[in-house]
Length: 312
Image 1: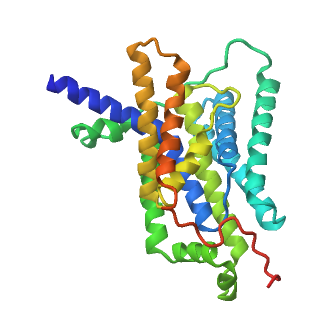
Image 2: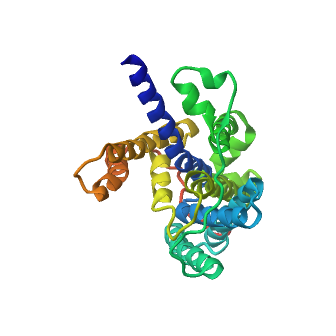
Image 3: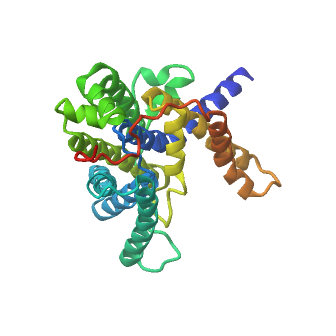
């Protein structure tokens, strides 16, 4: 009985990590962006672009590295478009992000239709498999969950550590926070506010593109219209719950991922409950957790506010 329980916990934890990975990657990217004062609600668009272009590259070249590269480039392109609208055009960042979500949804659906046409069978690719890390994978419970996974999980853990160090132990982290809190003072001190924000946007696109690429190249092995199904919005919730701290974002993503893993487990057990109710479960948990966090998050002072150098 103990062995069965241990296996069940290990399997559930491994599934939680897999479900949390794309949300955490996109959440880390948005965390960097918001630290610099750019609020990008277009995370859904970034992930969807990364998902489509990584699938396209994998289908064309059957090369995981190409899939990874094109997924990153797809995410960066969308994030930079939002940055250009926000920084150069000084557009409303919320509206720009939402508009990009609709634009990329239509664009990826159109490109997919142009490439593959109307088909009842979705084109598929070989998914990226697991890479077991010797010794570490033998650790009880967490070994299989964290160290017998696909490369995206290892990249996620690496990015959490790197961003944590960059935020709190480097000059770049101080600069990023200064630009997000008071861009005018940062500008007066000789910092290039636009450059810092564009750099943050590139990081957002890179990580969000990876999160989208995970869905098509690891989790599913195919692409379809609206593949992300709101995961970009859930990543935004993870950023709020995690208080823009890399470890906090990862923890929030794991909580949300556990809800998704649980609904899959409940579905496999068989039930008369409609499947649509199970599908709603992760989103309901996300909303409930978000409600309990209201008023507990400190936003950067200049978040979402366009910086106009000549305006006093």
